[in-house]
Image (cartoon, rainbow, N blue to C red; front, top):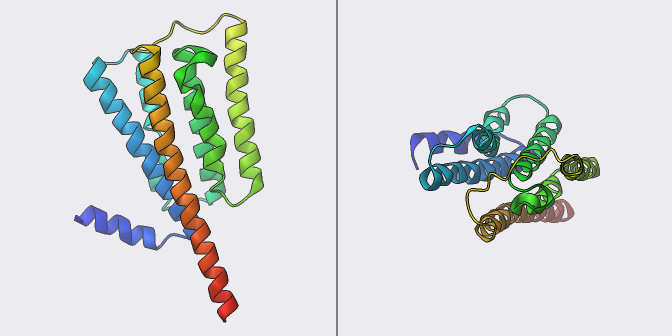
Length: 194
């Protein structure tokens, strides 16, 4: 492990458990987002403006990473992450077919990520964010304001990429939730032993 890896491990060890979970999920989302951006450029070349905005949105979690180490309360960071993710999904869907976009499946990841937060309010807020994105797409469709699809591949290939990415993000969220549950059980067992 290099010096930057050691520094990140040291800084991570100084974070609360919830901040470490938040950091882990944001790292995973950032890595997947950057990988998708690089794959897009390699396979399809230079993006146009609409595509560039979508790619920038996919890399957005990288901006939240350094904020994890600040004194900013975690709740606003968590809600910012959920809101940004919901907006990115809404935008991706808007430029790739609206409600029938292969990326529409990603709306379920917004409340899935919220389950890592410690309160029911985050989950309910994330459901509102995801449903708000769906409502925006429905309105854009209803008023015929959706742009032509920017999907650079066939719909089945787009579904494959969207579904594979959703599975990877869900696995990351499930692993973090499992770690949190294991830590809670260990803490409860230690408390009972004392």
